[in-house]
Length: 326
Image (cartoon, rainbow, N blue to C red; front, side):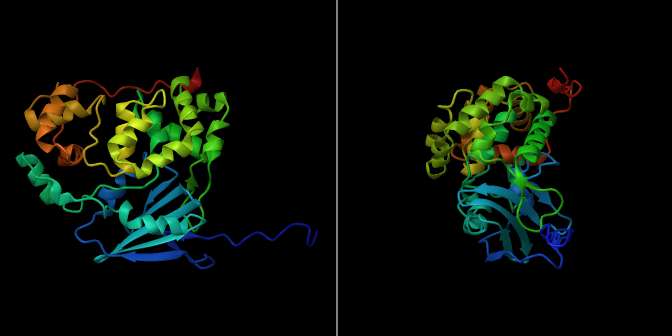
């Protein structure tokens, strides 16, 4: 039997987000932000649920992300060290991730452009000085999970993303904590059988929207270099992608400070309650209340959500439909 099988590579063991011996070191970049920076607030919107296989937060405060970059799969570990931020990356996409590190951490964002008109938002901004808007420069990795979140509960959407990425993605490169995966390539998404979408709890309408999007993946990724409004217009050319989905996408891919989410089930009531005492506000009323923040409406909505001032529940949480059991 000697020589019949190739020797198994030494397995990297990771505890508390720190690579142990036997792990090849990754590429490193150190960056100094020009103001306060809270990694959790900045990168938190990129996590799609607590079981997201592309995202991990560790007890030492580090954040791990697995991405499919234009250069290939890559894993990035970000750690705040005093006033510095240290990024370490592995895989073919490592260099690309490190080049994008400042933008991902909000270097293009200008928090000073926001002028609070409500006391609640002024207090929240004072208490959360490290809030910046991330810009990943990757469109598809924000678009697909946003499509999966259409018209369903967050639990259903998070489960679908987790199951599909783990089944059809690939292991994240580097000494990742736990079972991290890189999301599937566009061609892989296009080849997922219909029954696998069903088993993941994704109805035909959302699955068809994803399939239409990945067929024009290259054109959609070009939108990363466009202004947010123009990028939304390009995304909405894809049938099934509307203003809600395009806004949720460019908020992450472009760091768009004015891309307010319309068509959401809960956001109008939350914003209406926080800024106007109206828990039954609709999209029109929400936009009216956010009008003083034109150009910064998404940041204003983020601050409202971070303030904790939300109306109490009047009904039980909507139960997941569980179409995979049908």
